[in-house]
Image (tube, rainbow, N blue to C red; front, side):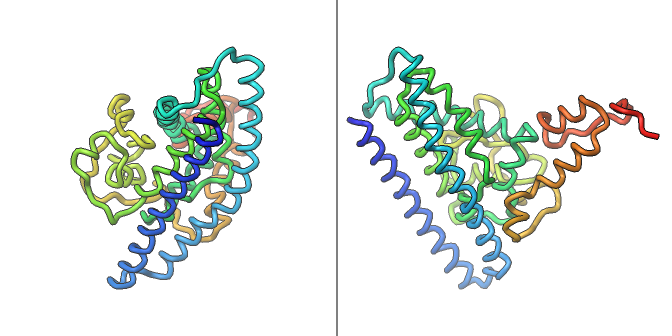
Length: 291
């Protein structure tokens, strides 16, 4: 198996999940129209989700090119060996990329500066297949950073990108309410039921089920939550805009406001790298006393 072959396989897997997503979308739209639940605002929300692909696609094309070049440079200059490209190493690359995705995803929820981008994916009050392509413009930067350790482990860049493509492509079909619980599959795979929990803003569902393909990472690291009642989707705060620009940059105004109003160096630090819901203690001493 060559790098060119594994690249084509990655493209074919991506295209297959796109077709599955389009089929689910057609069923969602037809079903909503027949039941009378398809409203113009819902269609507008889908359009807002799709609009995020404009900046995201442009950024990702640039990032993927730059990251691939960087990975190749490091691989050739400092890594003395690499895995051969085969079916088994391709499977291993997907498994490692999926493990990395769990931590990439979890840290993005727990760090304010990263949440600025990932919150875009969570800002819809609806759960439909179009939500799967709702991304922050700069979210790919963090992805490329977290995948870098795979270079150090000896994975050639083509396998790293293959693993990432498969992990992301798989998640297309899980953004839907059409598919209910799937029994034993819910126990070890990220399924629609498991991922609906992840998009819930109810207290019991917050920051749960980070897995990409496998949900076993959540079970191992204590972040698993089964779907019990239908979640309320979206952000915890009141946000329900379908304006593309507001969707793309939903968290930025609040972030800059918090930074501008920070009273201590510690608060600035926490506002950037602390949890998104971090708030200063009432007795926090100001950086500069204000008259």
